[in-house]
Image 1 (tube, helix red, strand yellow):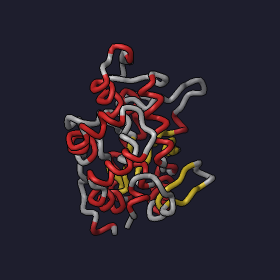
Image 2 (cartoon, helix red, strand yellow):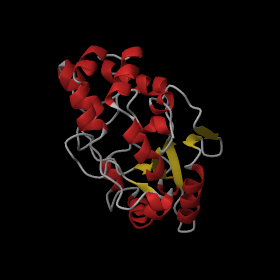
Image 3 (tube, rainbow, N blue to C red):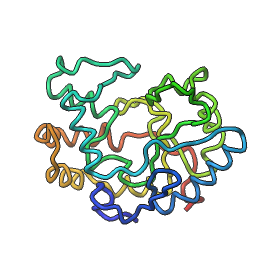
Image 4 (cartoon, rainbow, N blue to C red):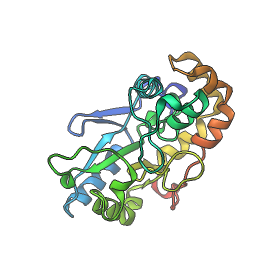
Length: 233
């Protein structure tokens, strides 16, 4: 079980840092992930984590750079949006549909990872983590076909598989259900409000004013695992 600080990314006591992976994972996720990675390797797929545990400050850095226009904002199709043309509420929506409010990111839990197939990356290719890469003819098409067939047996699912009116689909974002299902139940709107209120987050006032809506639309509005988590616990 995660405590309040761990749930909101303000502590990392639940995380194991794995230098060989260049990532931190919740202690309960290490074994299942390595087993999945080994199984994929036997079929010529080199699963690599490009993002795993991310603390509150790291998430705030992403949020603030996007808020200032220092990182691009994308629409659902991967087209860059005009930062300067967005009023504050639209800017918040443009950020949050790809990057969570600090304190509410699933990456705080160490149970959620963004993955690519390193074996499929051409030497001069810059990974973008956009939906076209996961299409059947995309650079990571083979990886995602394999995940479709195999990730469930290791306990992983895609929380942003389909568009549900909140976060845009992120096929590369996998979640270890036995940990994340419990964490999501524990991450209340009040906990998020406390973390946001104490943090150095641009647009904080509007985020807090809109938090009931943002929490419903972007935090708890996910695709559920297509299997029972009890059998994996």
